Each structure stands twice: as structure tokens, then as C-alpha cells.
Image (cartoon, rainbow, N blue to C red; front, side, top):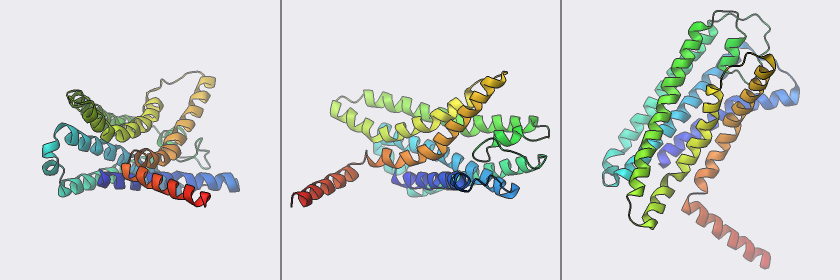
Length: 262
């Protein structure tokens, strides 16, 4: 679990570093200009970190499934070489998907200068301002959503169906509580990560300009939530559920209180 958490942290740091520094620079300098190469670099690293996040969370769901449903086989199934192979596959797949997005976008025609109605170079926003035929890109985007988001989410849901079933079969309430506690942090992270994505890509398109403007504002708000807020919530979700962290905080609090009394 800690091995996967380390890689999740790497993906989260990349996720935040791709978008927020540029957004803060725009807010401070009011300079909205961005070169096309910088925009493509943002598309690449944002796609890379997003797919890494999804696949690492999916791998963690399998880790929790084995830990709860097959605890006696955990050491033989979740081996170090197996985990390394999973991470290499994740980075390889994420890098290829990001490269495909960059190539597909860079081949589109844009009439400079263009105003990107978003706080970063988001794929659907870039497709909307292109003067080229976007049919093939939209098909590619749907394929990516199904393969890289919907199927991993379905795998996570299936894993938790087996996990919940196994927890309910535990006779002691203390055992059930311990088993649920071991996967509650991951489940919380999955909910707050996939929630905005599901809302963002499942809402119906509007034909009225006013409603469309509202949907665009919702897009920006949800995008800001899962690019800025969620990566910062993950460390709190996992550390506050960790007994070692809680014990360390308790010790620090007691020492601080003793220092104030003195």
C-alpha cells in the first residue's frame, strides 16, 4: 500500500505542478499569453498525471481486495516484482496516451491568436476552438474515457463489491471495523477523485447559450477541484487514517501542552 501511495503522491505533485503555477502567474501578472509548445507540454503532462492517478487508484483497489479477501495469499500475490511491473505498465500506458493526445491536438488547425476559455489547456476546450474537423478527435476522446476511466472505475467498484461481501462475512464487529478501516482511505480518495470526473463527462450538452455558459463555468469549477483540491486532500485522507501519524500527532500535542504549562 505504501509503495502505491508513493506513486500516487508523485502523480499528484505532477498534477498540481502542471496547472497551478501557470494559473498563479496569470493571476499575478495578468499576462494570458501562452505559446503553442507550452500548451502542448501542458496537455502531455496533465494527461500523463491524470491517467497515472486513475491506474494507481485501480491498482490500490486490487491491493485492498487481496488484503481483505485473500489475506493468506497476500505475500505471494502482491510481490515486489509484481508491484514494480504494475507501475512500469502504468507509466508506459500513461506516457503513450499523453503522446497520442499531443499528436492528435497538434495536427489540428488553429487560427492565431486564440482565446482558450479555461485556466489550462484542456483537450475538449482546445478541440472547440479548432477550425479543423474534430469528429475523429471526439471519437478518440470517447474511446479514452471508456478505456482509461470507465473500465478502471468498474474494476474498482467490482473489487469493493467483493471486499464488502467479505467484510460482512466476518463474525466479530472488531474484525469488521479493522477490515473496513484498512480500505476506507482508499475508498474516500476514489469517491472524491472520480466524482467530479463523472459529473464533468456525463452531463448532457445544452443547446441554449445561457445554459451552455453555465455548463462551461461548471466545467472550470470541477476541473479546478480535481486538479487543485483533490491532490491536496489525498495526504490528509491517508495520514489522518494512519495510526502511526495519529500517535505522533498525539505525542507532539502532549509535549506542546507541557511546554505551555511550564
